[in-house]
Length: 226
Image 1 (cartoon, rainbow, N blue to C red):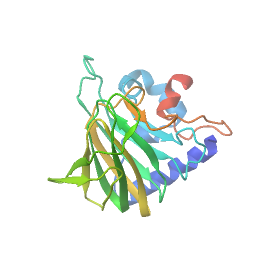
Image 2 (image 1 turned 90 degrees about the horizontal axis):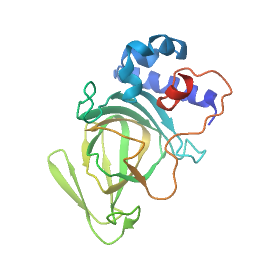
Image 3 (image 1 turned 120 degrees about the vertical axis):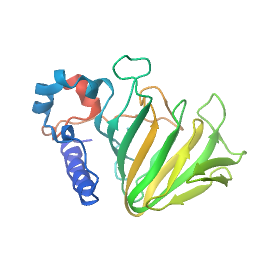
């Protein structure tokens, strides 16, 4: 992806979050220069991978397969300073922009439609110990006080205010329908480097063509720019 494209997607996301009165912490507005000046006083940002994140899953088709995220809080197990056992993100999915099928080895997460259109999910169980879909067993997905029981490949739609709980081992894909959706995630500790199992080859972080300076650093930029 070009950095200029990423910068524009960040501007658009900030405007949409503000319009829906979801306000980000101050460091969301830091320029790269401000981050470099302040990083030593805010070590948790890099250590826990807080901040902006955007991916095209290595496909180069962000509008068709992609997701924009901002990690608000996260922890590191057994770390004396960052031992909180939970994480929170806010995300933005555009109409028919799919997040590909994947599951988590350890993380349980609540996904909440925070506003916009309808959020559509597709579900499969995994074949234990593999990255393969189980096409034969039904899937159970808790949500808002009940349990949804679906056939393999079944779909669920959630409207603003509704949520689902996704347990480890449940393949899920999702996308917005009718209009973009602001998505909340409340979960156990998030580790995008080791806890995501995708169906088919994917790349979690994008390759970036630096055609202009970053508006804000992404979590994948911290080590490279610092």
